[in-house]
Length: 204
Image 1: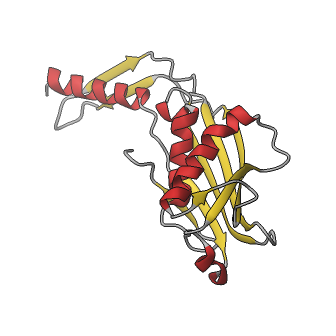
Image 2 (image 1 turned 180 degrees about the vertical axis):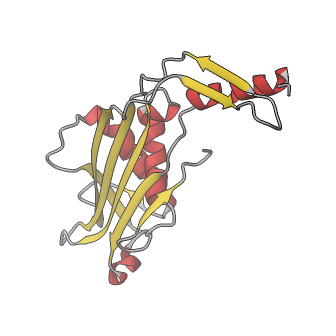
């Protein structure tokens, strides 16, 4: 039995692809609200601010506040000063770099067989040293947005989003990351109360 050169190349290409591609996972989103408050959401004025007691600086949070502002505008909100706003949207953010579990090792592909009474043996081995035992770092983002009545401080809606992506991905950059997380959080707004959903990143 012969193994063609084309088959060997195909197996090698598949191994390379598996090693070099880091898939983009979904954004995990949870929303909270009460039926009585949904009528108050959208079509009013809002002031967007950073939540108190945040460890990150203003420059780091700014792309996420801007992304939230764009999403709220699409929902009919009009951004104004705090004094004129009917509602307040507070944005809290955490970003961190994590190390995934080490991989088993470089790519290894094998096809084996043995000689028996009715056939001959077959053997194929491919070894590709691509540093498979060195895992990619991941950038994690946790964002929460709370929308409250400006006058009373009563909570109207809250959303939480978690997203992880490889440090080499374009979505690791702050502006792209913020846009992806905010889009997922406000998709199908206001969402189902207490339900956690995995939202696919647009274009991925």
